[in-house]
Length: 490
Image (cartoon, rainbow, N blue to C red):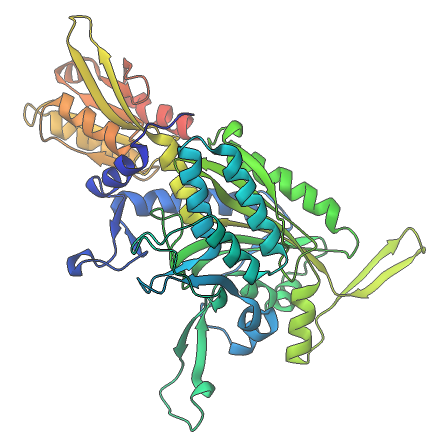
């Protein structure tokens, strides 16, 4: 897919105009990198979440879902490594006082080079950055920035501080009782949902009588104090994750890692994302808990970026929580090991993780769906429309029911159809404006099917169904509408 030059900015404006996404606290001039989902955005987001949840829990007999709390005991984050390791290399411009994540600063400069036709120089720069990040060579990163004369976007100077780490977790206080030590009341807003799964491993395994291999899935909010949050909802300070931790026998992790790597890419394609716009990107620097990691990247309007991560987390998480809680976290496996002819016995399971950002998935779908179209009609005049080609099963509203006029009993017939359909899928009723304007409005919000009730409906019980993607109109029985739409979104 080739995006138009202004595709992304036009999409952002469209999302606000039609009730998909609003700037948070816009009434008070907004809050940076925080967004509210409007009436259509909330429904699309729910549809995506439901599709993921169904694919994980309903279609896999050995994966169950939980909903862990956002607040967790602070030692959880010490055990997980987030207190000591959840940080990014940052650099400050001394003139503007603006702080940047080093990789974002360099990546933006590389994008500028590519825009000026210097693709090879950009690739060399990014390769050098990856190598330095892999070694935690902060002095080398600063030197790379200075040698390429990378400037601050505000001051336009290269007057940089040294590179240093910055922890991304939000802190808050828990409880209302003051103590002599303020740290006693500190808790964190979770930076990921995975730890809620790990600390509930024994609860779920025992109560669900789960047998390895099995998975635990969860969706929910996470919070990161991103210094440079950017690109609309791609990187935010408050976001939603959909994660699944798959618990396996030690030694089998590469088999399951490859399995979930392929399965997750297939799933993205199954919801309408073209395979040619997805690719794998292996991590150059592995997280402290991983022995393998890959991103599934999508070609956004602003370039190839991470959509989902698949990580082989070894036994790090369960071992750490056992160590810090001083409680045994193991699984007894009575299956026979063919190499020893004895039961596998007690062990700490290894984990393969799949983690996709719901907000990024939302941005993926709307980036693909948004289009501006122009054509010449048979009479030689020009016509145009803005359309959101959201896959019908994901579209916020599936069916618009439109009486041709507000009289002659047509609204009553339209209401009958509305009552018949609304318990099965999301419907929208409208009788204001000319029918052509209503069609255009439904195109713009992504409604895949419109049904018009007219005077002929009163005579023979037929209606006109209009298909969003090709604007085709077909006369069908009103009694068939529900089943046709159910078939298309099924």
